[in-house]
Amino acid sequence: SIYPDVKSGSIAIARIIADLIRSKQASNEPCVLGLATGSSPKTLYAELVRMHKEEGLSFKNVITFNLDEYYPISREAVQSYYRFMHTHLFNHIDIDPANIHIPNGAIDKSEIKAACLEYEKQIEAVGGIDLQILGIGNNGHIGFNEPGSGIYTKTRLVNLTNSTRLANAYEFANISEVPRMAITMGISTILKSKQIVLMAWGPAKAEAVKRAVEDEDTEQVPASFLQNHDNVTFVLDEAAASQL
Ligand code: GLP
Image (tube, rainbow, N blue to C red; front, side):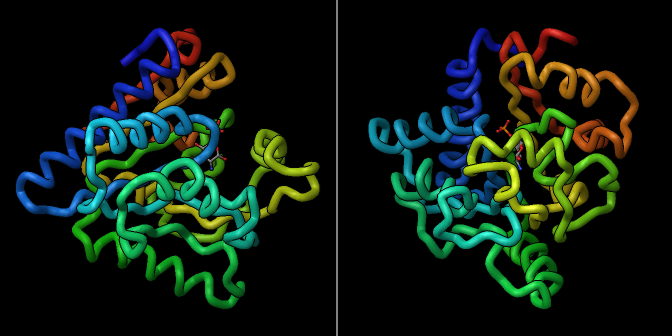
């Protein structure tokens, strides 16, 4: 779907999320959301906070799994995705903190494998992700699945490309401070979600969107693997859709 601007596109996604939360509430079921970070979802999270405050949307039945986290990074660091999620969403809604899951970027390297396996198990234990929200990197990455990530990848430690570190350097004092690694859900983890919504705003994303949607699926553009899922929506503004 194509919207005139970020605000209207974000409101549309917030409505999809709110409708799902409410329908799960009506049948007394948990609603399992996969969440993304970066600049793209900020307006979406602001709209969800507004719906909580002004429309009484409750998140009591919501369980969340975030896509990724830098490695290494402490939870308190201003650039951590743990901090991002609390600042933009979790601190302002009535979600049970026990229902929040974010890969831990502060653990010892020797514990990462077990923690990644555990993350996959936690997702399975609650019945899988009902709705996964995604952004897209300029190079076509989803989560931190950089080009070269295969369709069968699971939650794991990955190296970040220089282009991704450059794109995210604005959050840090300088590029040398951007972590070189991250823990991310894999492509197969993402594809197991029942429904996927990818958002992209602005001209910088237009080429990645085009390659993801119109070219053959390839490891070179990890978002193109979404073509293998039967319930995916790309929510775009006109600039991000300009090359379609
Ligand atoms: C980041 C995140 C992704 C995000 C993407 C785009 O590094 N790991 O989950 O979708 O890159 O970021 P932005 O929304 O800031 O353009």
